[in-house]
View 1 (cartoon, helix red, strand yellow):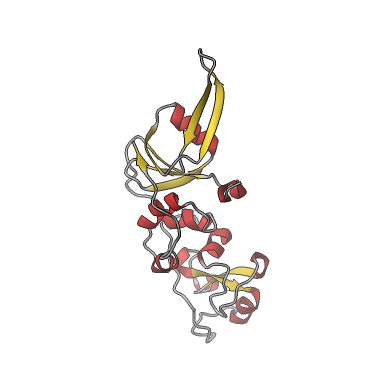
View 2 (view 1 turned 180 degrees about the vertical axis):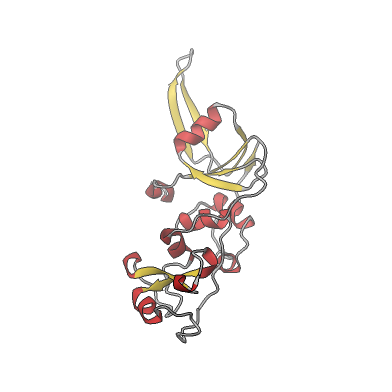
Length: 206
């Protein structure tokens, strides 16, 4: 069993548009559908899963190779909205670390803190929210970091689609998938974190 099999809530295959822009994670069944319908323009990475079907007229079992990265035919996407903000995504972004005290906590001990409090018209956005432990959030109360003398340990950022897909994978991706994702990263925090990411370059096949 590879690492992707342990993360079934999110698909194991990275889907791109025809220009190579990361779009989403999909499962084996959807990838097989795209393959069977001739909707894949190109793939990246060596096949890592073989699906077996029925038998042909010669009595041979039909097979279908699935690649870790596929690009769909069709027009490329021009503009994509920011990824949705959720506690799960926020905690992934900040690595389960309280950005006030710097300690790592379990999810049950973390909260979504608004840098500018909601009571002071602070928006519920990526740039105004950070991961905070319950103790620090309670101490900060209805104050800004400056008012509470609690400086942030890192600057919040809005992940783009590639960064969001990486974060929601809990940073568990194959080398060939990482090549595509990292080429689209913009955040200095994630670029620094993945600078020495293991994984040999994968083959691109037509």
